[in-house]
Amino acid sequence: MNGTIPMDPSRETLLDLKLDHLARELAAHSTPPALEAALVARFRAQAPVRRPAFWWIPPLALAAAVMLVSWIVRAPAPPSPAGAPAVSAAVSDPDGPFLALRPLEKIALDGTTVVETQFPRALLAGWGLPVAPERAAEPVHAQMLYSAEGEPLAVRIVQ
Amino acid sequence: MAMPPEDPLPELALLDRMKRGDEAAFVALYRRHSDAVYRLAMLYSGSSAAAADVTQETFLQFIARPGQYDPARGSIAAWLCGVARNLARHPDGAREEATDPADLADDIVPYAAQVDGDTPLEHLLRDETAERVRRAVAALPPHYRDVVILCELSELSYAEAAQVCGIDIGTVRSRLSRARAHLAQRLALFRPSGAEEALS
Image 1: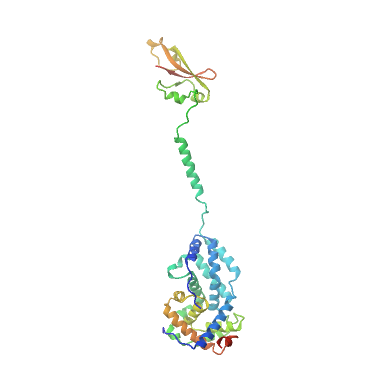
Image 2 (image 1 turned 120 degrees about the vertical axis):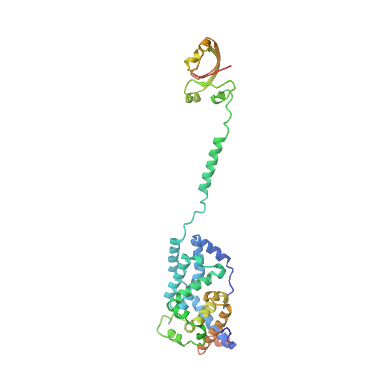
């Protein structure tokens, strides 16, 4: 069954002509145009939801924002301007910390001045600090932090 | 008439995009193959309306299950033609599947009635010569008709026709040879205009 049947060359040629004729006639027939629209609509309905081409931008922007905030929080504070005393700097001073006499918010907001002074130790009791009775009359060297209006904000005992 | 297979890579790229929902890729594949599928369906069904239905159904299947196409087994064109062929043959598919090709080798009589009767097969083509040849092809036994339609009129390669029919290439060649002998015999009394000059 797998053999071929030899044909007269002229019959082969004539058959080829006829088949070519049919092929040319068929080539004039095309798919109805409405079919494409129907199939495209079906494709749209069935196609998987596509991510937009730039879907990666929002997560990347979020990651960048998190990194930026993290860097800002961890970065060292800029140095204070010369001559402007800062409570935080005073706190880390080797002479000892300033003790707040007013709310911290007020200390941070006001323009402040540090003044070297000396006063009786008994005055510390008025600010709620412990004072030994036998030393109440002794003078105490201290630095006072004053607001622009002259209000005492904090005190630091200088040893 | 059979054409060598084209480079499948661009088509596979389109198919990959189509699977990811790229509408333009689907449209490109549709426009590339729809006419061939439609004409093949015309030859199998003998009706332009039925051919449109077969074409639509073929591409719906392509949309719904593009993964059914296996690039290792052949071209997209061959796969689509195979789907269209099965859909177009469906009404009498059982009878054709049950027929032994050996028994059909010299038997074209049962199919003549199907072609020459009052069926949709009549007057599909306006050109007299083309219509006569089409009817002669339609009158061939199914296994011979397959290879003529696929290799001679749909420009599939022998390998692609073998893929569509599920047979080896040697069988395609032998069936085509016998099919051409049948056709030549059936068309012997009819010569299209210009044939005499071509043969002289």
